[in-house]
Amino acid sequence: MCQDAWPGGGAGYVFHSGLMCAEQPRHVTSRRPLAGQNNETVTEGFSRGGSAMRWTEFVLGAALCGTVAVAVSGQGDALSGMADAERAFARMSVTVGQREAFIAFFAEEGVVFNPGPVNAREFYGKRPRTPKPPVRVLDWEPAAADVALSGDLGFSTGPFVMQEAASGKRLAGGWFFSIWKRQASGDWRVLVDLGVPSEDVVPLRPRPVERVTPPGVQEGPVAAFETSLEAVRRLDAALAERAQQGDVAAYLEHVTERTRVYRPARAPAVGREAIRALLEKDARSSCRPVDAGISAAGDFAYVYGTFEATPAGASAPQPGGFTRVWRRVKGAWVLAAEVLS
Image: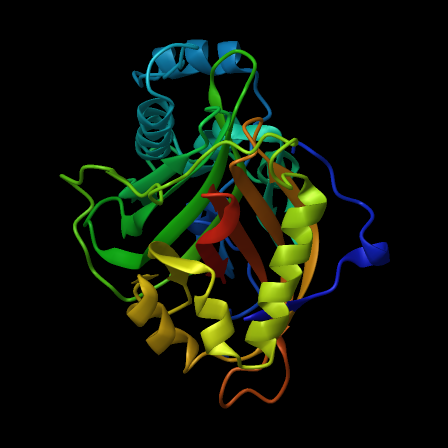
């Protein structure tokens, strides 16, 4: 749980738009382990990468590699389109390579954490190409998702697994959480990606995507509601401060039965009682927000940044990254998800 302090007294965010256990090394946080030299897994951590290719270039390249590209039109259900993009992302990771998939599916401004936010395209662009055949394969599947009423922002989350390509032996796994942004072309690209390591072994498929929109979500016209990023930032900072003080009851005032909270080495906590049980055992931490964004409908907002926490048994604070997603419900903001990793 974080106590927020916006840099420069609140400057430095834009409209658009990774809690680490003591045993965890400094890491790039995202849905899955990093691919290193010769496809070796790097102990620096978990990440999901960015794109140096334009979408059209990816379509051509993926077609040559036998994969299927997903171009989401401006019509149809936004959540289904985002979930399809997530699945296409995973297919490219398996059939072409982790690095190449991460490069193809991130927005230009998309970030992973090292341990603070870094540009994903630049980060993965510096890594070697995936060898053929690969040594390791990273796969995942969306399990839950939510999208703004305006269809321009959303999040997707589910299990991921890293396996030896030849034997299928599980090397690592956990839960990913990604914020997506719909481009002017209609394509979905990743804005923010965090992965939470866990020993949970769950099947990836078949797994239908659960829509986790809180009941009562509504648009937020400026005339009726405070929908600016400044309002979201203030609320986010207040929530984190209460959590830092150990005020679990105050924190729970902002959650619903569909709120999801993620911490390393634990299954996602969903709903008030599960979240209460998790927070009562959680290490306190201090956060530094870096950026935030809000949907065109004013009903979906996110904040991400870095934090430090001192878990039980640790001799010094451990760094990590965080993100929180907020939804507007009946004129008030509620916490949809919080991830510390």
